Length: 340
Image (cartoon, rainbow, N blue to C red; front, side, top):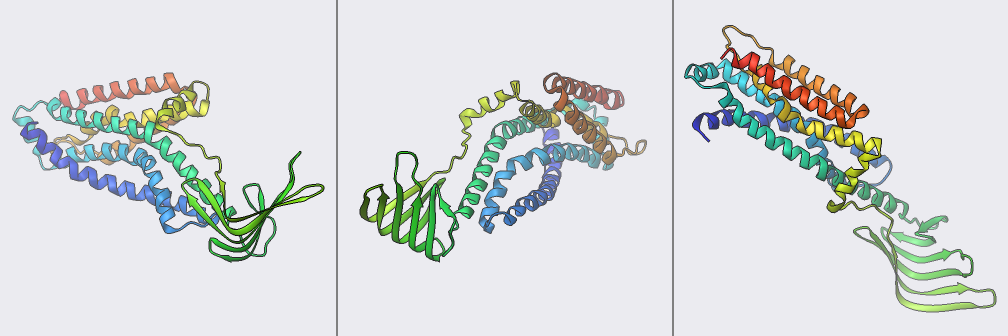
């Protein structure tokens, strides 16, 4: 890496980080407000909200990183143009392509990271968040209250006389008989409800189990009895990601999700030449409107992928990548290469 490349990237890095963290904070507030609505449905602690928010971070990256990168490239070159640094470089016979080359490498790296994030991390994090919320809802249903009927643990009806957080006193469990079986009662002096990952365990101390037959009652005494309940939660493993995205072949919603994911991830690579073209200018003769031009490109790109990804996921995605890729090259050639 030569001195000029290091200098340009040194100007780019702090501006990019500043924009990225600003956008990340703003989008995080929206996500956090959405997550906070869960408190109306289930009881969650601040630590639980933090855990759910961490599951949302990969998705927040998908929204903030492409736009922050694009604007940072444009503003970096605009700041250098205002200080006449770019003009000095061109006056020293620097080829504009030498400035574009390091940004091509960085843009490619950002797009590859976004692809990995969107295709691998986002589905995994969404499933983990869904399972976490399902467990919290299950725990809310298992928040057994004292002296109330109609409460359940798995397929057992539960009644408790006293409740001290997750420790219960004088507990009764009843299971209605299925065909060919007997009604069952379980009595216990004390019970504790524990959670281990997705497994819920009700530990009973000092009691009896009764099976009510037609002619006799069977009684079994115990010192400690553990009852496990493992709600059916979907677990999406990294090895299943390919199968997850293969559903796009016959699932319209999955096809839209895949097309949108790929197109958003490719945004930095396909449009960085637009950003360079907006920022590079001779300030004595040109007054570039960097903010307006940048917003126009961002809006055009995102509106296009919303429209196309829904109707023509495969061919539309290829068309958009070719359209914006060639358009950015032609614009850079006309706007920068022919002038400088």
